[in-house]
Length: 135
Image: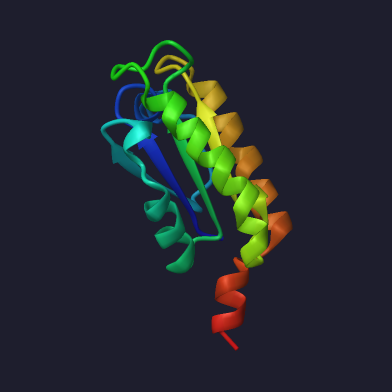
């Protein structure tokens, strides 16, 4: 499995980094991309990751009311909600995309989410786009 995680540098990325410092592990299938804010992750980036073969994509940002840019996490949450509604029309399961809000001090929540998302994507199988393009 190949999972792309866009992680806000202020909270989610820090939570993942803390998990590493605490010797907590999360699935190797997850490749994190550090972003300035979850609100900066355009829908196009998520679709491009799926088109390039990611089996799942998540965007992780700060908890409600803790965004360093005030509205970034709210914008990201709305984008993901809209994307989840339209993906099935293109034959892609909505569960392949998720949004996580996590505090920088909550490494356990990040790891639990990562493990759960990995299990969910494994259950869904490979990305349908990749299945069709592989023949």
